[in-house]
Image (cartoon, rainbow, N blue to C red; front, top):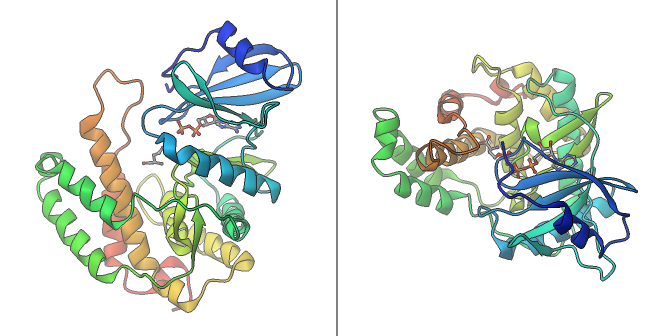
Length: 321
Ligand SMILES: Nc1ncnc2c1ncn2[C@@H]1O[C@H](COP(=O)(O)OP(=O)(O)O)[C@@H](O)[C@H]1O
Ligand SMILES: N[C@@H](CCOP(=O)(O)O)C(=O)O
């Protein structure tokens, strides 16, 4: 479970005294999540999410994330709305951590997305990309090529301890991506972690997109590739071309992709698979056995990477060749 920091009733009441959202009625730790501590806080005026930022979110990045959520919410993107206190502040210090309150978004995340849910998220991702245009703060993607190389270096010989030959595979894939990674595609603000556990559905519609703590400026089509990996593979590791076609058609009905963007999809999908393979492999070796959160399987992303390495034509993603 991901409640790393205990907040007392008195500490919560002190914090809420600075806001116009009523007095606290209840507070429950939320088990889901990996990076931060989240509480569901109910006040006289309704439900809110209290987030305490733990060590993996850099404090210097918080103004970008809060500014982005303010900006997107003003354009009706279904994202958490930062709650400003009477002085206009969002960020506070609570229990020695940076902390902020957000609107509570109704809805339920899915474990096994349906074709209809892939369609819904495709359109919502495209709307997010369009809504992000004009946001004037920047955050570089620290988990792109240079970041992957750092992670690979850090893994060292652990890679082969995970699977014989993994080190060589990572090195050759990194060399390939370094040589072929596109740098001339449309860029903008991307979510960069829009996995099914970060999307809430209500009555078949997307009611919320959460967890913007990897958001950054990067290629828009890279965000699409991250979603293809996260939404269009089945639990038996097979790629579901029907889901991919539905996701991509729906995305393109809102924001058309250029020919260069679609042509780059296999490489971007390889990069997206490598990114999560590396972070999961890193977590595998750096998570204490008694940690609250069990590390996710790197194997899933190794299989996804191998799938994309074998792709010969865009038709394998459900696109016209
Ligand atoms: N604004 C919100 N509205 C509703 N539920 C939320 C909201 N923010 C977070 N949650 C809940 O908290 C859980 C963890 O949030 P998340 O941002 O994914 O944490 P982490 O960054 O630690 O992975 C989510 O799975 C969801 O259940
Ligand atoms: N989506 C990443 C891990 C990040 O977890 P989140 O709960 O913050 O989305 C993965 O699956 O490796």
